[in-house]
Length: 419
Ligand code: PMP
Ligand code: GLN
Image (cartoon, rainbow, N blue to C red; front, side, top):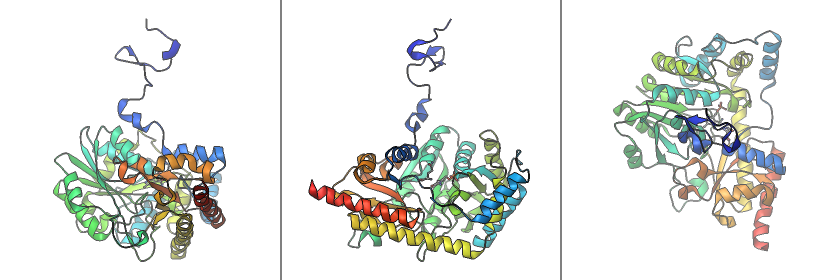
C-alpha cells in the first residue's frame, strides 16, 4: 500500500517512488509560470498601467464583433471541422494571395489553430524527435522555449543585438552575426523558428537576412517555421517579407499567424498555419490531441475580417506608428535609451541611464516606483547578461493611457536624482 496524505499528498509517484518535488516533469520546470501572467497579476494588484503583457485596451472592428455575435446567435456553437471552418481557410488563402501573391490550397494547406501559440507548439511537437535541434533567435517569444522543451528537443539560439556605433539608438537596428547563425546549424537541426516582425525587439527581418536563413535551412534539410503574428504592424518604409515568398522556400516553410494582434481580439485565440500539405497534415495530427478544435463562432467572424479593405490595414499601421512614437518620446524624455521598433507593438528600452542595470528587478519594482508595469527582456534569453538592463513596453493602448504612463515614468528620473 502506498502511503497517502501528509506533505506529499497530491504530488504523485514516479516508478513507485513518492515525488518530493512538484510533479512537473523536469524539462518543464523552468516554465512553471509566465512573465506575462506574473506582470499582469502585479499590475492588477497594484493598479499600475499595464504596458507589460501585449494586448490592446480597445476592441477590434465593430463588424468583426457583430459577426461573432451573429455567429453565436446563428447557432455556430458546436465543434467546427477539425481543420477549421471552410470560410476561414479560404479567407486565409485569399489573404496570402492578396498581400503576398502566395497560392495556398485552403483544402489541404491551411489549418486553423487555437491561436498562433497552438500552431507553434503543434508544429514543434509534430516535427521534432527528442534530441533534435531547433535554431531560433534570442530574445525569443517565451512559448518557443517551452514548446521545444515539451518536444524533448534542444534550442540553439542566435543573439539579436544592437551594434555599438556612433549613431543614436533610434538609428540602430537589432541584427545578428552571420557566423553565429551558421554555427547554430548542425546535423541535428530539424527546424528553424523565425519570428518577423520580432517580439520583443520590434525587428523586421530584411529579405537578405531571410534569404540567408532560408539557404542555411535548405542546406541542412530543416523546415522553417515562421511566426508572423505582427505581419500587419510594420512601420516607416519597411515591408514584411514572408519566408514562403522567397524562391524555393514555400516547399519547406510553415507560416503561422493569428487574428489576435491584427484585429485586437487576443482573447479569441484564432490562429492558423499554412504550408505544404504533408507538413500541415503532420501539424494537424498533433493539434487534434491538444485542443481538437476551438473558437467555433469566432472562426467565421475572423474570416470576414481578413477581407476588410485596405483602409483598415493602412489605418492600423498609421495608428500604431503614432502610438509607437508617442511612447518612445515619453520613454526618451523619462531617461530611457529607446530602440525604435520597425514593427510589432513593443518598444525595448535600456534603463541604465536611469540608474537601473537589472531589468528583472526594475520590472518587479516599477509598479510601486512609477505605477507602470513592463517586462524584462532577459527572461526571453539564455544569455541574461547581454540584455540585463533592457525592458519591453507595449504601446497598443489608448493615447491617454500612453500619455499618463509617460508622465508617471517621467517622475522616475526625479525620484532618482532626489535620492
Ligand atoms: N508569437 C508571438 C511572437 C507573439 O507575440 C504572440 C502573442 N500574440 C504569439 C505568438 C501568440 O499568439 P496567439 O495569441 O495568437 O496565440
Ligand atoms: N504575446 C503577448 C506578449 O508578448 C503575450 C501573450 C501571453 O500572455 N502569453 O506580450
